[in-house]
Length: 457
Image (cartoon, rainbow, N blue to C red; front, side):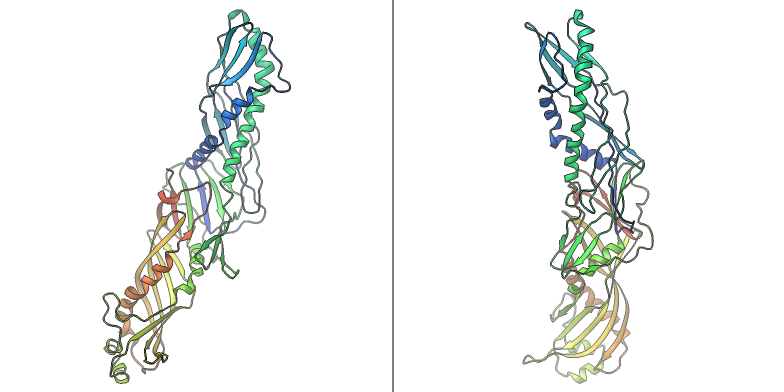
């Protein structure tokens, strides 16, 4: 006996299509894993076997045979195939032993054999449980009885077996097997329930992943476009910059594998949440391998500082980021662009306010190295280049700011980058779907996107 359960999986979303900030491509590896896990977690076959032993309306007794029971349900063999434009066809083949007593005492059994011969694909549809979440439904379930073997005496065949098949199995099995697939989908749907739940980014805001369009199915995968909502603590939403190109998974990944793409524009919006945390005041006199941070050190670049401060005074530096951070990506390399001001001040005694020496406008890039820990994307940075250095104001008179390039470059690397990396330790939340474990994901930087090649345990 072979029950074949065929269903279509997809997600419906009302509204117009938007440029996704993230893209999820679900291949056969993830779908197979989740359906098999759901089958195991739901214990549906054990429940089905228990249910089969109960008397049901329309089940006619077979003369001379009593105490029909279902036992020894074989482990299912699950076969999935993508149906372009529809969803997924799932076929589950299994077998079972049906036992009964022949009055007065002889025990006979019908033993099933699993022989996968043909599959049936039925179109289906899906709905939504709440806005922004997919819901998977089944449609067009068909149960095909492939073969039956029995150890009944030959004088009872074929009359009794044919009656058993016609009056019992053909009528009862669809009612037992088809609801099984719905029970499995309940478990699969639960694993999407937290997809668009807002997830905190430290104390500064939240990120929520929402479907931007109806998931699409090709012959190789299901694609889910996501429009993340990046919201500041006070409630205002950070708009994602317009994407210049469609987000696409590059070629070269194994057939049937799954990927998550995070666009550079989305990462830019996420880091905008942290922008205020990048503003710092640094008062330390001793920083890494730098010379002592005093007016005496600065005077070697700007002689007028020595005139103003014949006795060395501690330096204080204030850095402010006055434009939104921007992430750019090219194959193998990702940069964080920061525009802001750097002000050097001389400290004074007796709690007096420090005196500004000069204010510079700066633009510099940081190299980004990505990693995943738990359900968070982490970044670590190092200085790439100081791109521009312009004097905005100065109480030390005019000077050639370019002569400060080496000094400022070293200062940013030793004093400021550790501050940025400390801020980034908060991590950026990844979408919560199907209980995905990201720790095994392989990361690739491609044009305008970060790719997480998802690996199952």
